[in-house]
Length: 286
Ligand code: BEZ
Ligand code: FE
Image (cartoon, rainbow, N blue to C red; front, top):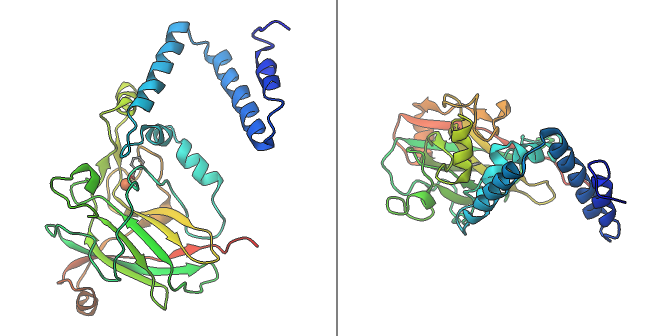
């Protein structure tokens, strides 16, 4: 059978027919069908296709141990968020993208510790509980946290002004499933724009900003792990996140607090900013 516009898809799919792994075969067949449909519909010239390959090559070449340009590409195309959303478990706190800045292990810390190792911005307390979906508190749950500072930079982006581990912490909930730590209110920030993904945003007149947020990964025995953020309620860009990751249920008020007892408990002076919310995990399916 000659390779023509009409036989191309079947020919490539047939080439995968001996793939022993059925799921891999299915993924490759579906990818082939959609990729060929894209080419048939968009009809790129040879030069345009070469330009596309050059772009993907540049994306790969921009990747290092501390930079993942392919993840960033998946993020700005909404693919990361689509995969996340389709895989979401019903019932618990909504999930959102992991992002590229969880590349270093968070330092273990005690409840109430500060993850702000610089100490130049207004203090903020973040607290809440980890619960099972039926409301049972989950003691000894692991709460892994990372965030940028009040200027919008993660520690790995500013090694000269932020010590390693700034804005990061690995906590365990107490007997009542509670967590609490001190920090600063993070700023909104641009995703990295000095690589090919930045060129894509520029060429399409898209802004690179993410609304202010704190990242969480929560794990508890017998429960489905959760990767999510909380978003700062009055942040710019909540309606136009460059990576489409905002879910309204994840927006939290970082209110000014004058609560003296809470200030004493958390070792801060009044007034301080306080974000209080629970993180809920569904039980692992049997
Ligand atoms: C982040 O929130 O850390 C992030 C997510 C996606 C792309 C870039 C940064
Ligand atoms: Fe982030």
